[in-house]
Length: 128
Image 1: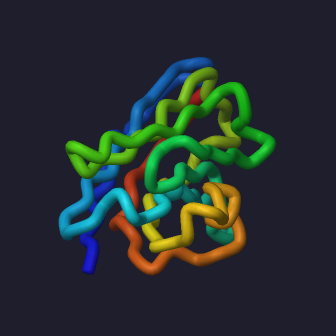
Image 2 (image 1 turned 135 degrees about the vertical axis):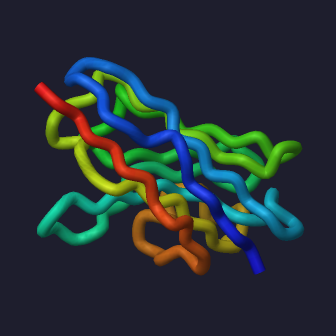
């Protein structure tokens, strides 16, 4: 079992930055591929970024490439999402997710494989 707690959301002006954190409890954190997802009002939840268990593989949706950076600290059981150059369309509730995946699959697998565990979500609002 893994429990995830998301934090770091808030209100920010367009062009600004936020850093989301996801703290995990439970064992073997490094065996879990971790991802960030988001859900805007009236829309389905969508994949944002993922990082492999070792941290050596990352993958992003096209609309956030070059602006967002996912990373993890396995000693602290935490995954981060650094969001820069935020846009109005980034407004959403952001969720972290975890799934045990073979290291051979890489972070990209998280885009199509639903997490086994979810955080509670943290609201990110970008204003003009």
